[in-house]
Image 1 (cartoon, rainbow, N blue to C red):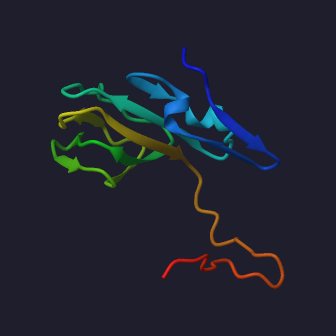
Image 2: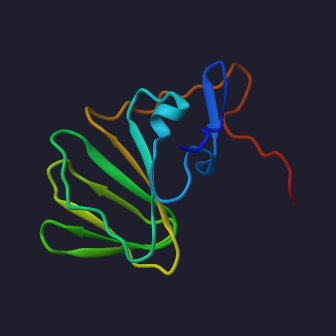
Length: 137
C-alpha cells in the first residue's frame, strides 16, 4: 500500500492525489483527509478498462474528470463522453458504468452524499473581503 501523504493543521488538511495511492484503482480521499460531511474518492482507471455497473440506495454522486477521458453509460442506454474538466451528476438509483476511452490513465473524483444543500454560509473576518486580488498585471 502507498504511503498516504497528508499535511494537517487545526481545521484543515492538504494532500495530492499521487500521495493517496499508487497505480490503478481507488484513492480514498475522505478517510485520508478526515472528511466527515460527505463521501469522496478518486479512481485511476487504465485505458480500455471499465467499472462494473452499479447504483446506490441513498447517495447521489457527482463525477469530476481530473485527467483523461471517460465515457459514462446510464441505465437508459445513453452514453456521454467526459473529458478533463467534465462533470456528471447521477441520482442514487440510476444505474451507471464508467469506461476509460482515452489513450492514457483516467483519474476521476467522485463526491457522494445525501440530505441537501447547506446554502451560502461563508463569512469573512470583520474588515476583510472574501475575495481579494493578490497580484498580477
